[in-house]
Amino acid sequence: MKRLYQTVPTGCDWAVEAQGLVKTFGDHRAVDGVHLKVRTGTIYAVLGPNGAGKTTTIRMLTTLLRPDDGSARIFGYDVVKESHIVRQLIGVTGQYASVDESLSAIENLVIFSRLLGMGRKEARQRAEELLEEFSLTEAANRPLKNFSGGMRRRLDLAASLIAQPPLIFLDEPTTGLDPRTRNQMWETIRKLVNHGSTVLLTTQYLQEADELADRIAVIDRGKVVAEGTADELKASVGNSSLQLKIQHSYDMERARQIVEQVLKVRSNTSTETGRITAPMTEADRVTDLLIALREAGIHLAELSVQKPTLDEVFLTITGHGVKKDTAVDSSSAVEEVRV
Amino acid sequence: MKNISNLTVGRELKNRASVGQAVHHSLVMAYRSLLKMRRTPEQFFDVMLQPILFTLMFTYIFGGAISGNVHNYLPIIIPGILVQTVIGTSVISGVQLREDMDKGVFDRFKSLPIARIAALAGALLADTVRYTIATTLTFLMGYLMGYRPDGGLGHVVIAALFVIGCSWAISWIFAFFGVVGRTASSVQGISMLILFPLTFLSNAFVPVETMPDWLQWLAKINPVSHMITAVRDLTNAGTMGQDFALSLIGAAVIVAIFAPLTVRVYMRRA
Ligand SMILES: Nc1ncnc2c1ncn2[C@@H]1O[C@H](COP(=O)(O)OP(=O)(O)O)[C@@H](O)[C@H]1O
Ligand SMILES: [Mg+2]
Image (cartoon, rainbow over all chains, first blue to last red; front, side, top):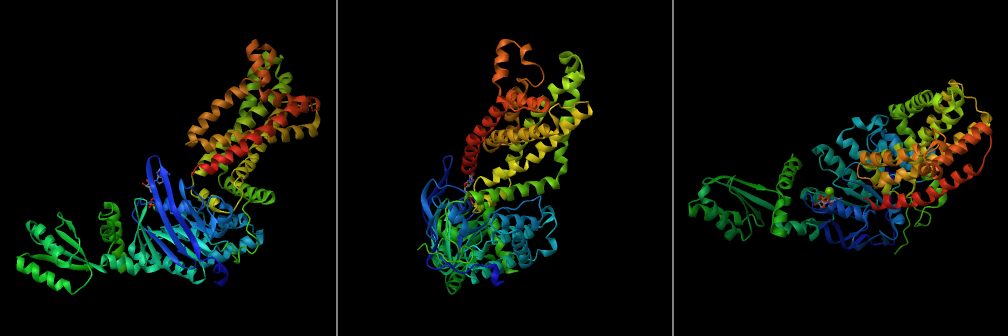
């Protein structure tokens, strides 16, 4: 284990410093002036819905894409002018597995190791070590075509750790994984940092960022809309959210007004399902709310308390919800994590 | 600030791969391509079929008309078909490069601290296996049909290496289309459009003297004609003349122009 990971690079406080990064595709600004600062030895999460610009940002930081404007430094080295040095300091696990489908797991790792300057024997040894570490030894010689999503992800991560890079980028490392595999991935990421690496990951799930990251940047439409620790972010949303199901739809509007008055927050109303969702900063206020609703003669069908979803973080920070499909995604993630 | 001491990078960090490293990286990438070829031997069918088919077809169709009989035509047609087939094979390089580059693994290659040229050079280097197969089969077919090169085995080997080397150089042109093109089929289309006039408007099948003046002029300046003449000189007479030198210079010029150009475009395109 000890040999697998990199120690903290000394003498540089900031693993990533990005200033005003911009990337335009056609006339669409996918990344629109992103600032990021990641302290060495920490886990940093970039949180945002589909299409927010997470992947594009990562691709610029990892020298795969040239920024149209702005600049970024990795341990003090410029990603454009000193790209070859930057590549020696980073490991990249992209959103989609970047391994060779027609080769076996061990062949993939050996080739990457050889490219990183290892001799034949050393490369083989390193590949075996990593396969062992990621529980892939059994599948070492099988073609990747028969690998599950989780195995592919693990192999991809293994491939980015070959050179023990001090900084590791993980683009949505757990999207599409089942809860058990997701927990394993979280364990692995924590281990990386315990051994001194810095990790920058992206995610669509607040829970994941909360679970792993020291600091979080919330990104929307190519811009960082909030930045801070998980606690700071959640405090701005309420630690959990209250969900009310109203019995009669003609009461909806009045109910919403009462909720917003009593809890002093903005709420999210869905007329089709008859649900009102609101951030809950103080549990005590709920008593007041229930009394107020009773006095107004509004009948509830259901009442529940939920951990905040990305949807609520977004609503609070940006004043608009995330796109429908992502909202569904993030709330189903809540369910899975709770299991 | 820049004093990063870590396990991996005990040495000083350099912002360029050295020439030695570039060669090493290219060889590893070539090894990767060879591994992939071994997984899908089907891909060699067309490379093997074309020399056999073309040699038989063209020799028996044109033999009598051009040289009186098949036997006398062999010293003319075998070098012609050889060059045509092997250059034709180099088109596959560009098409495959396009297909390969669309795969996720190329993102990893780009994010590794390796020489930028390695991914391209490696793939093209491995493709010389294809040229070698095509070359060997063409000479073999010629032999079976009664071709006995007067230049001797030594010169036949030199001719083979010469054709393989030149085709490798030419494959950089198709690699360029491969990198520029949007899809594999568009790359194939453009490459064929260039390949056909280049190989047929030459002295491959008929003596240039039988062509109309304007075509003669074209066929004579066509670099492929020079290559074919160089091969005929080698296999039939065992000599290396002006055409041999011109072809090699041409090949070097192609690499000097298209290799950096292709790498540049490859780096630009996300
Ligand atoms: N190569 C590309 N060409 C055109 N548009 C792109 C390209 N890559 C990304 N985009 C667009 O840029 C926006 C941000 O994409 P992306 O960075 O992938 O977001 P995320 O990773 O947060 O889901 C999206 O609207 C996407 O459609
Ligand atoms: Mg993405």
